[in-house]
Length: 333
Image (cartoon, rainbow, N blue to C red; front, side):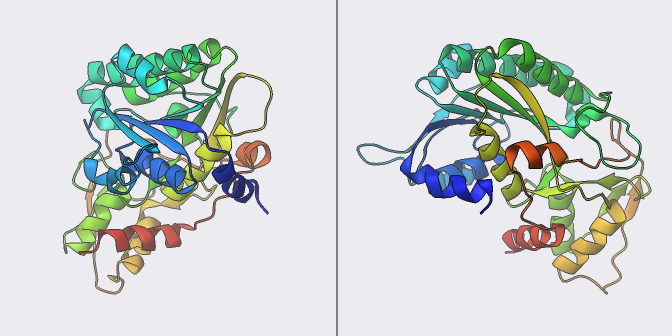
């Protein structure tokens, strides 16, 4: 039995109070749903800048009765008092509220800074002041910058190429010096995908955007020559990583960092081929339109997940093909 299966079996009998910032967003709403299904108490803090109330429809069913297990706080991580309110009585914080876009971080660097650095610092200090045991936060593979082709370990040199990546590196540094006795864990996500990732935003992941294009009979756009590689990880495996990191059996405090991906590199051309198969469009002669690479884009990104496997017990459960089938299926009318 895997460590994750053990936790899923034991958590319902040992409920904790979890805070999920950005819980109305893509990853955050999956975290909220998974925790509620495991009998946990969940508080979501979200300002709905990019999150959607529709993502919390299932969670809101737990918000009634004498002792509701779900609470939604419509607030902003840039407001310290709202951060303190969210953390009051909490055992675990899963921090996912952020402005998640490399292109937008160039267009609105001050917004990037206020959300992704000031907001992070507010939550980190509010959690510590509230006596939170474990603080897990979303970092990013973007902190690595340009790397040679092949798996990247956590000890690789960092070279952020965008304001977004700079903010994520700043988060890691703040966590390393300000976590005190609270266990702070940064998860360096590779390219996360799955249901609820907004295909209508130009800042969304390529899989959600291409899925909608194919389902609507439109031409998918490839930025660059199509040989750019990424490590695509299905959102349910990211949920697994968060729960494992939050409940890691480590008596010591301090910060730690883990790559969260599959360890498999996939080129954009290979991805499009797999997505054509998942959407039933293979053999229809669909050809992409090629456009220039975007500022701040990284050529190659592939995770070495040895550390997450050995210290967290992390084991990706979904192949790219399985994740694509689930994602496309969720987007069909």
